[in-house]
Amino acid sequence: MSAFEVSDTHIDVMISAALEGSHHGPLSWYHDAGDEIPHTQPGEALPGHESYLAALQRTHREVNHENAETWGATLLAENRRSVNHRYNEDEFEAPYIFTRYAGPFDPVAIIKAIHCYRYQSCEHPGWKASEAHDFCEALESRMIHGLPGYDAAPWEVNDPSTVTRGGVPAQRVRRFGA
Image 1 (cartoon, rainbow, N blue to C red):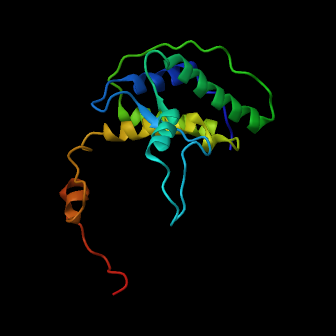
Image 2: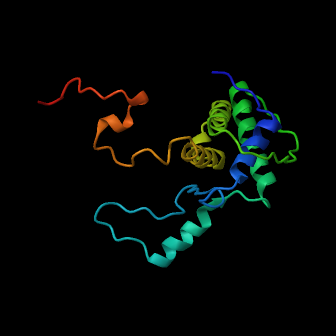
């Protein structure tokens, strides 16, 4: 697997898409960098309500106009970390200055940009626990919800013909376990 540092424009577009208005408010998610949020085992008492809420507040992340440049720099740094790891380099990313682009953005194109960024940034062992990884998950989820037809699709499937393409009726091929 090879890796390269994505362009500032690539990062700018991802951050701009995160800033684009949504009826769900700003792009936000939770990043648990370890034991910040208390986890319980079966049979174990749940943590106190107030301490749990405090932990959630400490792990809450959001992209807004005030921190857009910081998030862009974070994404570039994570991408550089991956390239450094892959090629045994010790380079630093260039200073980043955010340029905002106006949408509306095509959800499919943004999802593809996220996939490119992930592919270029996942080479080092800390990727899955990174802030950039969680940002990508949140942005991809937002873009999926913006795909044409997403809101009209059924939430629960009780009739397989409601989830086929082009009105083609779903055909039962085989019932397993019968």
